[in-house]
Length: 375
Image 1 (tube, rainbow, N blue to C red):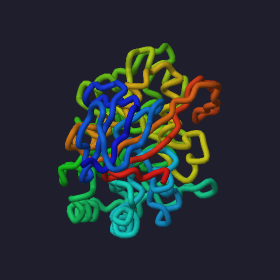
Image 2: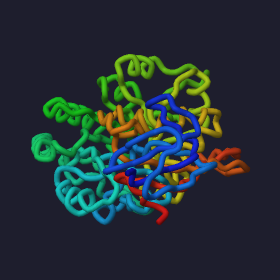
Image 3: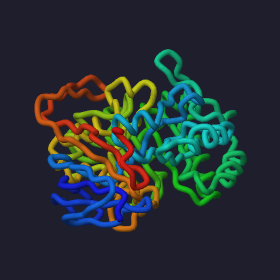
C-alpha cells in the first residue's frame, strides 16, 4: 500500500520530459508509482495544482545563528517549497563543524554545503556591517581548508570563494587562485562569486574549470556577462564551452533585468536559477527561490524550463541524480505549486521594476514520502 498519493495535479518533471495531469504515489520514503487511478493511505486531491520534484536552491545562506547572514532553512521550506538547500560558503574551516552539528544534522530539510576557503566563512555581513572575508589574506589558510574538506568529505560539495571589490578588496583574484588550489588538492569543484571590479570578469571566468560554478552570472554592469550592444562576452561563451555552470544567485546585488533580457535575447539561458537568499535579501529583492523563478516566467521563459532550472539542473550540478526527479525509486520529495495570474510587482538589484502577470506560490511539500507542509 502506498503511504501517500497526490491525485490529479499537473505533474511537471523535466528529468522525464513529463508535463501531464496524472497521479504520483510514495511508499517507504521513495516515489513508488506514477500514473492514473493510484490509491494509498493518505490521498491528496491536487486538481488545479502543479506537482514538481522537490525544488533545489543552489545558492542559499542557512547557517542560522552561526553567521550574521544566515536564515532558517525550515521556515523557507515551508513558505517557499524548497526541499534541498545548497549553502554557498557561509561557513569556513574554522566554524564548519558547528554548522554541521548544530544546523545541518538536525534540519528536517536537506542542507548540502560548499565550504568557504576563508577560515571564518562569511563572518560580517549585514545591513550595517560589511567586511569581505576574502579581503584579508591572513584569513585564508589552504592547508586548513584542505584538512577540513577531507574531514567532512561525505558532506562538502565544493569550495566557495568570493572575490570583487566588496568581497576581496585589495586582494583581487588571489583568493580565487587559492580556492582553486584547495579544490584541485581535494578533487572538488569551486563556486565563485564575483561582484564589482577589481578583479575584472575575464580574470575570474577564464580560471574556472568544467563543473565549477559561476554564481551571480546575470549580474548588472560592471562585470556583467553581456556587452552594451547585446553580445555575450567571449570569455563567457568560452567558459560555457568548457563546461562551467552558470548560476543566477539573485541575492541583494547580483541580478539585473537588463542583463537578463540581453542574455536571453542572445539565446544564453542560465544553467540554474537560485535565490542567494540571506538575512538581507530575504526582505527583497530576492525574497526566495519561487520569486526568482517567477521573474523568469514573467520574462518569457516557459514553466517547464523554469522548473528544470530549479530541479534536475542543480541536481546535476552537485552530482546528485537521485534529487530533482520524480522517477520511480527516487527520493520521495515533491513541491506543490500554484501558478497565479494577475499583476505582480518585481524589482531587480539596481531598482528596475517589472510588473509581471505570473507568480508561483508554494502550496505543499512532500518530504521522505510523506505530506510535510502544510499540516
